[in-house]
Image 1 (cartoon, rainbow, N blue to C red):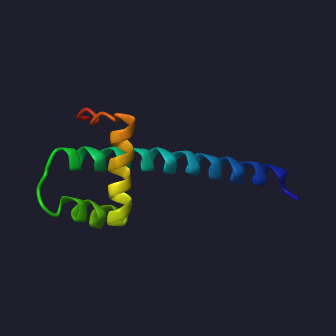
Image 2: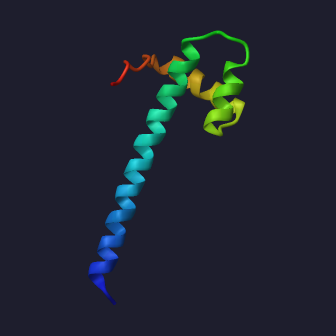
Length: 77
């Protein structure tokens, strides 16, 4: 058994998992921000299409953000 390869693979997995969680959090925040910036008809459907989430999940995400008092993220860049 090559322990060094196993440790490297485990570390790569943990790093990838951490990066995925950060990306998920960012995507959720940006989706909430996009929906709060418009009341245009079909905006939830557009966010669902772009993200691959269901419209039900998008509605739950907004509801959760409202309950937590989540602020719209500041512009980056």
